[in-house]
Image (cartoon, rainbow, N blue to C red; front, side, top):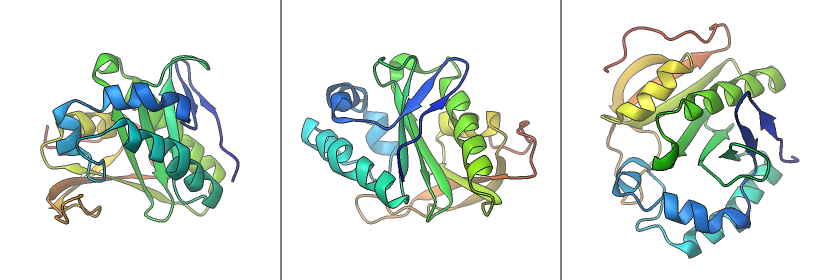
Length: 186
């Protein structure tokens, strides 16, 4: 599959590239990233970024099984965060660097990716979301993007240490209008 560019009112979502290695490495040094992101190598190094950006992200687009976008304010802007759609699991994952949090960028990016998935994949009726229980920031993003909270259970994605901690789970249905739903543990 060819990488797709998604544009919103304020953002441009593009496939991340090796040019993003230094910025993504810098943004992922915050200790909370190691705690909340299951598969992120920790500590995260420039070599980890180069592997992800040079091999994993392009392979995900080529196979269609892991579509990852760098979140930017403009076409040539630096990476602010990342969002991914994983069709084989039917879920999304995302992170935003600290300097860009609190501006609504991640909710905007998530709404755009959800819209793109539902528009281009008529067979998809639901999109899942999960976060480590207590990840209030991620839950706020999912709620703002119209996801329904479905409860607490172990996370589906195994952590780098082989554990599956308790997670908050949610779903966005094709039939949903994108409005926030009540019932979130926030």
